[in-house]
Amino acid sequence: MLRMIICVSLVIFGRELAAADLPAAQPFGTTQTGDNVEVYTLRNDAGLVARIMTRGATLVELQVPDANGVSDDVILGFDDVAGYESSDNAYFGCTTGRVCNRIANGTFALNGHRYELAINNGPNHLHGGTENSLDKVIWNAEPFVSGDGRGIVFQYSSPDGEEGYPGTLNVTVTYTVTNQSNDLKIDYAATTDKATPVNLTNHAYFNLSGAGASTVLNHVLLLNADLYTPVDDTLIPTGSVETVVDTPLDFRQPQVIGNRIEELIGTATLGYDHNFVLNASNPGELNTAAVLTDPESGRRLHIRTTEPAVQFYSGNFLNGQKGKGNRTYALRSALCLETQHYPDSVNQPKFPNTVLEPGQRFQSSTVLEFSIAP
Ligand code: BGC
Image 1 (cartoon, rainbow, N blue to C red):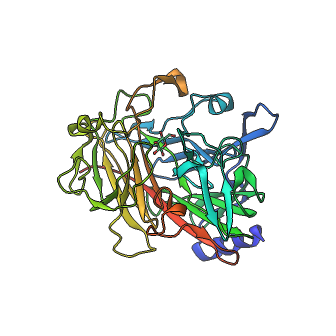
Image 2: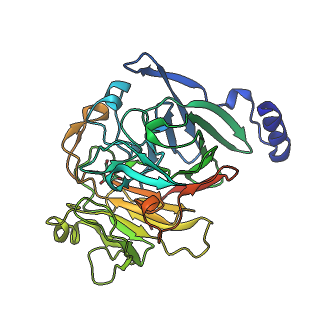
């Protein structure tokens, strides 16, 4: 079937793609439990190089040229599987789920049943659990070529009850690069055999000056959001949705990240760690979530998503851990822009629904587009 799709694509687009163009798997190491981990490399003609491993369908490297054409790796991560399995790993580059962000007190009720999840963040459940959350399991990988694009479909079947969640969840995450635009596209899909909450994101930590550079406080950020969801002391949304106007969360016009971050130091978030509600001009279509610019390198990242929100997290818990190439990841040396549904949605009836029903198909897309700032 895959071969047929490839052949048809070749005829339609007339490019000289061949089986040899299929991204090949390379060994990345072995987990503590003896599973082999592989890594795939995707490239386009504009110099974008993305490496993704089968543990957690994790983006381990993202090379992007700067204004002078010099490439650097703009995301945090580790050189080996042991690094990713260590306590230094703050979800670097992973696929996050089954439910990203927090679920209050690690519990929710659905169809008359109460479900209990791991409590792994203060009194709450964070990023899908502790042992077999989507960032920690080994995914199947299927490379493909289509038109002038190349990609990998990562697939994982999470059994009923895994990490306390109901239903067998069949998830795919597809990473694609093409020569049509200088971007990495991430498509998520999921089906279930029992009603279950689903909220998927990628947890890449960006520093557009290159991973390991001092801080991202000089980066300039635009967020396409008039509203955000305030949180309590344990970072659970209070349920209200409020304006960003007259707060340090107003990024409707591009703002230097460091300019107002100090105003948040004394708050529960210790910096930026907020869910921004996106102004969606076309709900369900790709809308701008964020535009991040690094004045030093000239690199610009434009994030579009079909998701209704984005978590802007300014790396407030980075603590000087050593990452790729023995570089130090200091406090605020990277930031995350996690496209998502609102945190704790399963317990918040007023928030957009995150419960996937049998017979439905969850689908969502996020595009990371790189350019040079004018
Ligand atoms: C959360 C932060 C958390 C970080 C690393 C982010 O998605 O919003 O509060 O510290 O992930 O786990």
